[in-house]
Length: 320
Ligand code: CDV
Image (cartoon, rainbow, N blue to C red; front, side):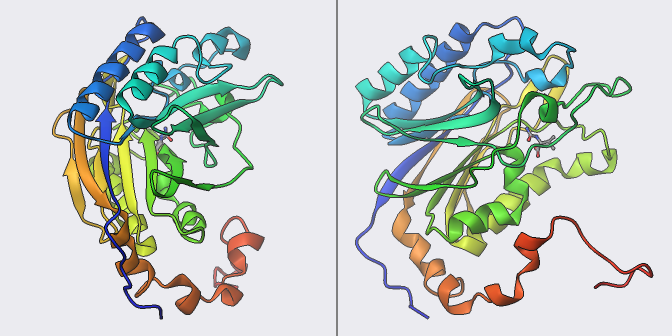
């Protein structure tokens, strides 16, 4: 085991910029104005990086099903920055603050992804992450109170989970449902991630099993705190919360330390900025001790992780 071996502090002041709802009638320009106001609040508090939610430019359109998907093209960005988001990029560069931003991406060859861009303090695009775990359903389910047709509107990315050198550390990204899967964090943990950025839209009514509704906040913290601790990384989870087109969504944006502790958490379900000083050297306390992956992991006995998708049992129900 390596041991703690902390170097000089590498503090990144990180802001989580939660958004309240974006209604269907709200145009992109008004969303960008709100994002820019949040960015200035974060910069005023000395943040070097501000994290925005998933699909932060429009209402959460997968809650409606349409037969002709091309009639929803206006919800997608064809470039990033796009003309409507350029003012946000300009403000960020002028204030020397980086950001991550969730958006719907329509590629020039017709692919649709749920994406998140990471931008450095000098305005340079570091990376674009495309959501891997796509929840919900792919066809119309008219008996639902509202749809969650993400599997119709977005294809799952095969690019996996990257980790990039930026902000003086190792930065990873994930989007909403990705945060519930331990594989997400471990894929980044195996690349030495130190700070994971995640936007989310989580309806408070989980229609396939309403017994889970009262646990929405607990499950949100549970998975991100566990993922942070088990990989010795900071995790920033940022909501678009509140009541959007009659659907109430979880807020509870939070910044989590490698210890699994919550350093800052929002108190409202509206537009709100929280900040925390994240010393990336703290990751070493976990990555070089209990979770020294190279020293303690046993990949040779984990082969089902990549060779098998669902749970397999014998006909009598006993494990294989
Ligand atoms: N946008 C999401 O990915 N939402 C899912 C909901 C459908 C459960 C989530 O995991 O929060």
